[in-house]
View 1 (cartoon, chains in turn purple, red):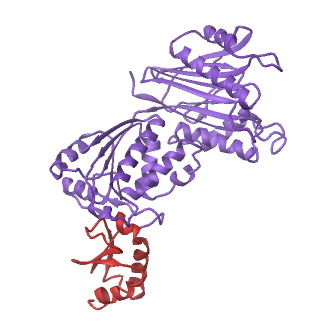
View 2 (cartoon, rainbow over the protein chains, first blue to last red):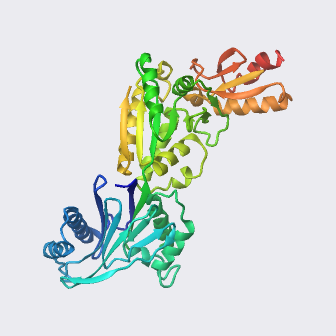
Length: 390
Length: 80
């Protein structure tokens, strides 16, 4: 075992005017044993393509996760996919990325643009073996993993972006490599890399994609825990217990909430020093406590973090806000979404009497809901989440 | 004199940002930069309608845009 883990992120642009995507991504993960990601692009667009690609990715990911051979997968696909009335073929391209024990990647590629591998932010040419099975030419590769390796799979919509509009021959794989090499930063998550490329595709298409376009990325990174304290315990006698647990954990520490930060500061024998700078007029200023990485106000800040998390799971356009801004919510978003792989929430259930004023849009049930919804979102980002209530 | 403006959740919703801005301007306008230290505070435990401000040891609640000048006169200018 090593200290590496996989971070998966993908997103699609729908062909202009379509309500269904003809590309489909399926991911199966089993702890640190393996991660299988299949990106399939069905023939045509709309319903038909969507059915083809969904079937293809589901069948392959399930079979690969059960360690069946690629030959078996391909023959199953050929035997299962419905044949197109018009074209008399059953067809869906696919790219399989299988990460084993976080130390080896296996790529199996059929007719999609080849996977880009970035090693330390630079394009890395990997070996491919050509094989034929069931009349299909398939390329396979096995690659030993390094920290910060990024695998980028795409459907052909990506390389056709801009054909005839802004670029005569479209945006070739080399152009995508140039683009992402220039932007690359070690802090980018898989999702950020995928959406950065997709946004560029969308621009090249002039906002009206001529084909379904999907980018799926897998990033190999080290595990990093982040701990978050949110709210005082319902029983005041539990303060020391809660604080001891919080400060005994490895990793960075975030403290959210006015009363909570005072309790944490008291425990450390330090002072809370709130800032007066409003980087975002809607988000209260952060504070500083010696020994704590980030101290913020509670419910209002966390409501914004939840909004960012929900957006991260869709098109991630808010990335351009939270990735650079200095307010508390943006800083928490960066720590939770980008830095952390394992997050421990220590949530206090004390009710703040001042917040039960019906005139205020904040209350106890809102706080509990934020924790629940945020941890769901973080799980969907692939983070390991542990929530303890006090 | 130390002035703390509460920037906790309730006060934030009642307009802390505006009060901080007014406070900074008032201190500037009256040339009090070397006499007054302006800081933020988390919850002062007096969440009411309006923002809580602590002038040295005295907590004043319900500070708003409307009563700001009056409050600044009474708790700062008259005392310095």
